[in-house]
Amino acid sequence: MPVAWRFPSIRADYFLDLLDFDTRKDGCDVVITGEGSIDEQTLAGKLPAAVARRSGTRPIIAVAGRSLLPRERWPEMSLSRVYTLTDYTDLDSSKDPGLSVELLRRIGREIGEGLGA
Image 1 (cartoon, helix red, strand yellow):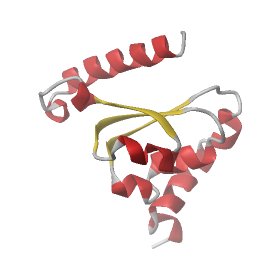
Image 2: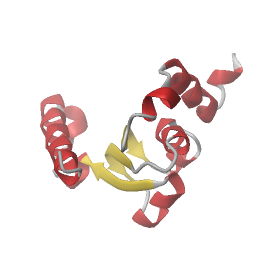
Image 3: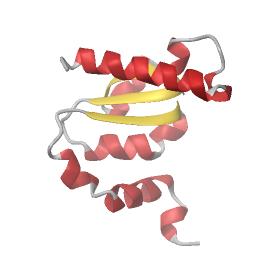
């Protein structure tokens, strides 16, 4: 198995390199990243942690299905805000793609409004 597939942080960096993330982020005022669940594994190097590490001093917003990471741990990933679908509904959005789309649109509008867009 190639080394890039053995360790989450190496795999995340591999994909960020493929997407030319470092060049693309330079034109951004804020970085938005997402994941199904933000938790201890995220801190261990999953994609949002790699995005945060490589984003520099820009504000970083995470969007997730749920977050098990307490607010006081957000600074470990330089997160300025975390939006979760579970904050917007008591229903299981993982089993309802239409509901997920509706909630993500709502979150997107709120992020845009918060950024003055």
